[in-house]
Figure 1 (tube, rainbow, N blue to C red):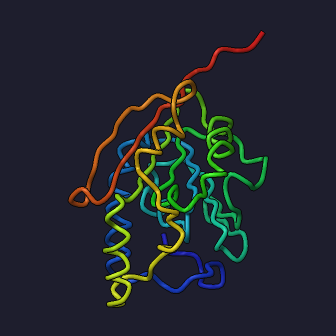
Figure 2: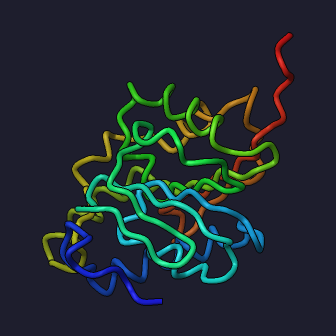
Length: 201
């Protein structure tokens, strides 16, 4: 699949190093998307994750406030929305992905983020998150000065501590399935499973 036309995406093209790092994140997320899963990609940019997954996912929705207008191709659609705000009629999903996105969400929005993810993720579904280690900001600013990366909102990282991911998506509601690092320890992977919550009587 080809990328959406430039009229849809309100950002300049990625540089080769940006694309390499993005693809590395996609490769870490892919094993947690089962064939036929419906995916919600938060911070989807131009929808590259859906193109990477191809037929593995049955379709889904991408949300990103930098999109200029809605876009649909095949079984997925991209919407110019922030999260956890945004449209209420998204349906439900087996996978929610936030790849290099959580660190851009300010702390005051974390409770709403958790609640919205719980409401959209089916029981047994997976929440797949990558966040950079704190040392990455210094490296990214250096690469940005050398014009080797586009930057992708480095100034919005809010001093994010990867361990806060566990605090945001704690029990009840979520169960940690996997935690690890990649990219020489500079990036972190968290995978949570949506627990089946008891029905209130």
